[in-house]
Amino acid sequence: MSDNQKSTKKFDPTTTISSEFGIFGIPLSEAESRLVLLPVPWEVTTSYGKGTSNGPRIIREASEQIDLFDFETKNAYEAGYFMREISEKVLADSQKYKELAQKVIALKTEQSTDTETITKLTTEVNAASKRLTEWVYQQTQEILKAGKLFGLVGGDHSSPLGAIKAICEAHSANGKSEVGVLHIDAHSDTRKAYQGFEQSHASIMYNVMNLPTPPKKLVQVGIRDFCEEEYDYVENHASIKTFFDIGIKQRLLKGESWSSVASDIISELPQKVYISFDIDGLDPRYCPSTGTPVIGGLSTDEVFFLFNLLAQSGRTIVGFDLNEVSSGEEEFSEWDGNVGARILFKLCGWTTLTNK
Ligand SMILES: [Mn+2]
Image (cartoon, rainbow, N blue to C red; front, side, top):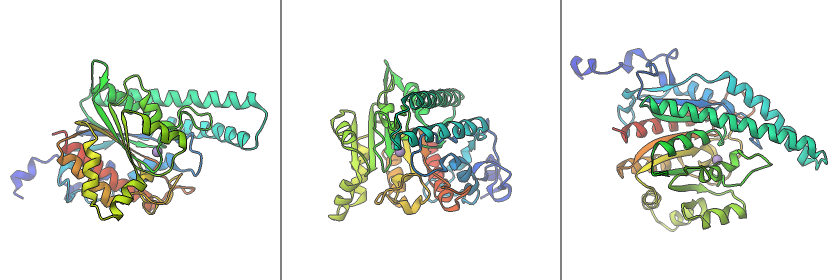
């Protein structure tokens, strides 16, 4: 590369990368960056396992080891990716209301007759979740209004509801959203409420489909853990197409290619796509500390192939979230953070490239 070409870059990754800089070691401010990441360290309604509120922190720490040049997305990072500060207030509220939610779960498990306490605590947790969703909604609107591309790093899977709301509204005509949600997950997440919590991680896609301006389409991939009510809901909803994990595996095991399956997935999506990526959609070997791991699932190769094909199809990624990356009981899990950071980097790259 000539000196002339180099000087057009916003920064030189070979000389300026340092851990004192931002996510992926990119030394740019929010104003200088094309894409802004909103960390949401929230895990109030997680039912099993903990540590998802550490997701943004462990991903950020692991992100420093990633080589910026990428075989698929090349120099997309030069546009700049910036992660906002992890909010201490959100983290403190998450801890506070998670304790209340745990009390509710414990009382219900022991079949307590103290319905007054259960109702009171449940109401408090639901109100806290609503405030979080409103905060995420406002933050997302602010980032979009500044002309930035948007990504969210959770937190449990309830954390992006406000972001999906803002993005569906931002891309709508006559009150109808043009956005399709590509939802990668082990779980359908279409419960009306879970354990009494209206904004549970297990209800995110039910809540998304019941927004005032819902997405045009919901395409679920890798789903392998759901109840009968959820099965009936997705199978009978005109705007939902679910690629169950077992259905995908049957096709692959009979000799069909992933390329063919991935094409079918993409063909269900409209031009504008929001990706909601629950890390547990992957085989648990990629996310051993996630709260609700389920056998089966996708490989990172399959997911990266799907992203690439989505971009090649000419569709635009209008935003994304990555959620349920967890440290488990520990403060840090290098492997979970490492996989999360690599997926986040691909999401940032393809979002940037599909918005040129
Ligand atoms: Mn989920």
